[in-house]
Amino acid sequence: MNIVGSGAIGGLCAAGAQRANLPYRAIVREHSNKLRFVEGLDGTITHLDYAEHDIAKLGEHDVLILPLKAFQIGDALQQWQKRINKATPVILFHNGMGGTELATTWLPDNPVFLATTSHGALKLNADTVKHTGMGSTMLGMAFSHPLAEKLQPVVTALMEACIGPVTWREDMQTALWQKLLINCAINPLTALENVKNGALANPQYRATIQLVCQEVCLTAQACGVQLDEENALEQVLTVVRNTAENYSSMHQDIAHRRPSEIDAINGYVVQQAQKKGIDVPVNTRLFLAIKAL
Ligand code: KPL
Image (cartoon, rainbow, N blue to C red; front, top):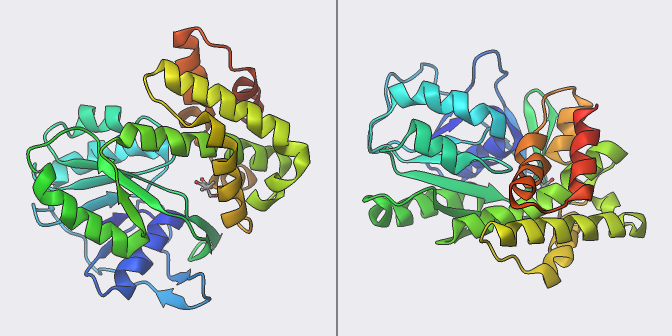
């Protein structure tokens, strides 16, 4: 198993693999630091192992996991395309939407999986990640593939060890919209207000979160995806509570003056809503506010 990048979620995956004694290779992107330590929810520290030399090409028994930012996936796929076999399973693991389209463009022949998680994880510094909140991971195919049936149990078991519990989703697009809803509500608000996720439980944010939920549900429905509107607010608040001690990834990106995933999160909703002629004023306001930073 090959895990690319030094992000917080990649760190959780590598630590999970190491604790389960699964062979893995942590691959650092150019100009990035190596992650060294991952602090678990129980405070135990996992020291990550690094392959000393790079691999030339991945085969069909290698799995490639790309836990990257949404805007890094296109470049990564373009680069990895030349270094993998057509049968190498690839797992795209990012917030927001766009993974299916990128996989269709760059890896149309490979079995490509999509993963999304509600675990909270935070980079404390360049070499340390802390697991800050329990969540779960959804896994499904980006598009149908002849190897899907054979690979599903293998990839699910790997991901279960890395970042479980894992639910296999035949309706992955619905799972992605469910996670999109959560990111649309939590990420920009925590970044703009400079607060941890837990602060959003405060009643002062309730009306905004409720409106974000309504707008995302309406847009999803127009795109052919049925979200559970009645429970949408409660789903967001559950993640707020479970990851109360986390700073969201967008909070961290803005705080460290890095590019954020806003285009793939609220930006995606605004774009889809525009296409369908739906007004999404609150998502638009949050999108523009983050863009203006
Ligand atoms: O996905 C997340 C993120 O920060 O991007 C959540 C689940 C909201 C955890 O912070």
